[in-house]
Amino acid sequence: MQLSEFFNLFLIISAIHGFAFNFFLIKKNIKNKGILFINLMILVIALNNLQSWFLIKDFFVLKYIQIPWHFLVAPLFYTFLIHYLHIKENFFNVLKIVIPIFFISIILQVVNLSFVNDISNDGNYLLFYEKYTAVEEAISLLISLTLFFYCYNILKNKSHLFKEILSFDNLKWLNTFIYLAGITYILWITALSIKFYLNFDNFIVFYYPLRIMTTVLIYWLGYELVFVLKQVNERKSIREKIVAKPKEEKENLSKKFIKITTYIKDNRRFLDNLLSLETLANELQISSSQLSKVINEETSQNFNYLINTYRVDFSKKLLIDPEYNNYTITSIALESGFNSKSTFYNAFKKHTGITPSSFRDQNS
Image 1 (cartoon, rainbow, N blue to C red):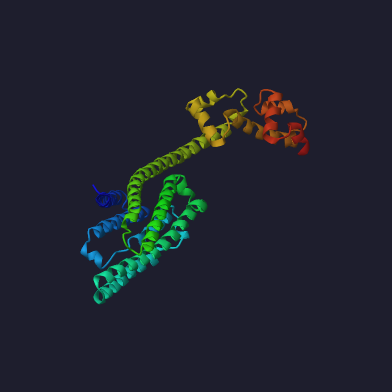
Image 2: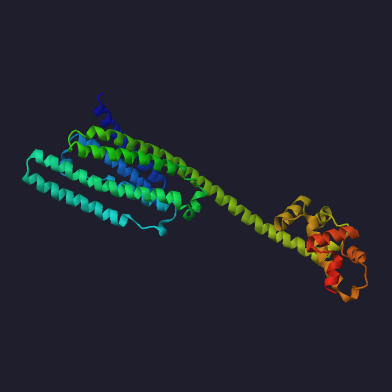
C-alpha cells in the first residue's frame, strides 16, 4: 500500500471514529453544555479530516468551496473550557464573533472562487484557489494560536476561579490535551510554511503528520472524555450522598444531645459524684457507646469533660454567692459533684484558666 493510500484510509477511519464518539457523548451527556462544545470540537476535527479525504479524491464540490472547519476548533475548545470549569461568567463568549465570521468567510470564498473561475483558465484558477485557502488558513492559525495560549493561561494561572471542579477533577487530562495540541500546532505551522515555500505545489505530503496528529486527538480525547466524565459523575454522586448523610445524622445527633443535656440539667445529675457514662446511658435508655458518640460529635469532648463543665459552672455560682463566703472550697467542690478537692482544682483550672481561690478573690 502506498503512503498516500494509507493516509487516505487513515483520514476516513478517523472521521468515522469522530462521528461515532460524537453520537456516544451527546447521547450520554445531552444536558451538559461543556460536553456539547467539546463534542462539537471533535465533530469539527472529524469534518475537517473528511473534507481532506474528499479533496484527495477530487470531490467536485470542493473545487468551488473549502469549508474552513479548522477555524472553529480553538473557539470551541475555549468555550468548552469556560463551561466545564464553570467560569463562563468571567470570560467573553467568543463564539458570538467567531460563528458570524465563519459563515461570512464561506460566503466570501464562494463568491471569490466563482468569480475567478469564470474569468481564468484551470491552471490560474487552481493556483488562486490554493493561495486563497492558504491565506485563509494562515489567518485561522493565528486566531487559533491566540485562543490556545489564552486557554493555557486560564489553566495555569486562573485556578482560583475553578476550585469547585478541581475537587472532582485534577484536570491532568486537560493539561495532556494542551501538550498534544501544542504538538499539533507545531505540525500545522510547519505544513503551512512549507506550503507557501513550495509555492502551493506538491505540498500535501507535509500535511500527513498534521492529519495523523488530529486523528490521535480524536481518539485520545474521545476515550479520555468517556473515562473522565464517568469518574466525575461518580465522584459527584458519592459526595452528594456523603454530604447528605452527615447532615441528616447531625440533625438527629443535635436532637439527641439536647435531650441528654436537658435531662442532666433538669435533674441535676452532674451533682452526683458517682455518675458514670454507663449510669446515665441506662437512665436515658440508650447504649453507652451511642451516648459517648453524641457527646463527642456535638462538643468534640468526652463525657467527663461535659459533666465537669456543668459542675464547674455550678461551683462558680457558689463561689461568688456572699451567702457561702465562709464555706470552704472543699465543701463547695464536693457539693458541686466532684469527689475530691484536687479533682475540683484540676477541672476548674482546665475550664477557666485560674484556680477556684483566685476566682473567688476576683469576684468577692
